[in-house]
Amino acid sequence: MRRRFHSTGETAILLHMTTDTEEPTLTIDELAARAGVTVRTVRFYGTKGLLPPPVLGPRRVGHYGREHLARLALIEELQHQGMTLAGIERYLHRLPPDLSARDLAVHRAVVASWAPDTVETVTREELERRAGRPLGDEDVERLVAMGVLRAADGDYEADLGLLRLGVGLLDVPLSQEAIFAARKVLIEHSRAAARELSQLFRGEVAERDARDVRSLSAHMQPLVVQALLTAFQRSLKEELGEWLTEPSEESR
Image 1 (cartoon, rainbow, N blue to C red):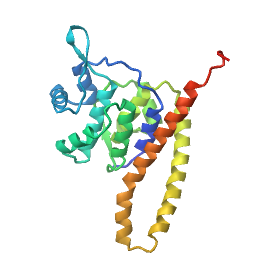
Image 2: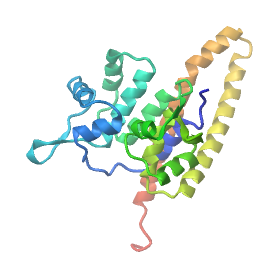
Image 3: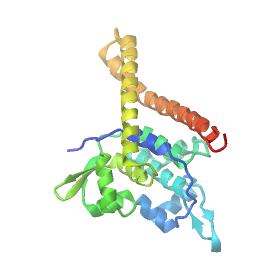
């Protein structure tokens, strides 16, 4: 049986609360392994313009970074939604060219939020393959604590929609307590927003036919989530910008 654990958008927002400071250090083989694709696929996406070119290092060896990994994750999610390669090309080409890995994670969250339940039972080996990296016992414990995994008779029930984002949180320099506290704030405010928006839309469609209501709901749902994520993303940037520009205690 498949079911969801937590919202992909919540985890994406937590990821977006960190900065992209990592330099491109992955070889094409390492990038392919972490993304769970073949080297040939990475090169093919590069020729189609779906991935930006690598940064050339010593001996003209190409290096890839988080943006490439995030783009591959977004492509995977778009494919999971049934989008053709031509459709994926059009989608990616409409995105701003300077999106960071965190911005791409938000876009992926919007896409993933409309996917059917994606909880599957996997072995430890399959779990690491899906995660794109080795996972120590402590990593697995943190993923279980975040609700991304559940132990299941020696295997794991993994929410594949959250797994890559949860793995990204393993590298975020925040304590588990801070992540849980942030998630609690997000859940409380997102539920309040959902409740108020639902009441607003109910008032607008109260006199309409049930089929019209279902059609409007299906049409509005992705638009509302994208608007919510966009509004939050911009508000967070403003708040972080003010915080980072405030004079420190030492400089006063």
